[in-house]
Amino acid sequence: MTIDEQTVDKIAHLARLELAAGEKQDMIKDMNKILGFMDKLNEVDTTGVEPLVYMTAEPNVLREDIVKQDITTAEALENAPEHDDSHFLVEKVIK
Image (cartoon, rainbow, N blue to C red):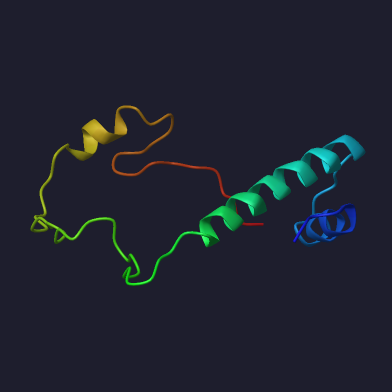
């Protein structure tokens, strides 16, 4: 399969992209390179190779969740541009 200008136009439309003529030609070259690489991968014999779900067979090591107070409220508010005694003050963002 090769990528042509009509295919790039269709993909650009689906992705809501506007491509200039030069960009289209670059995109055609890049997409054809990608498809060529995929063809090379399809040539590799993978019979007997199990699908890879995780990059390692090691189990995930999780730590216990421990609730702790690293900084006080006053320390947290020191860097806030606007605050009251216990809260950050921000502009209203709901219309």
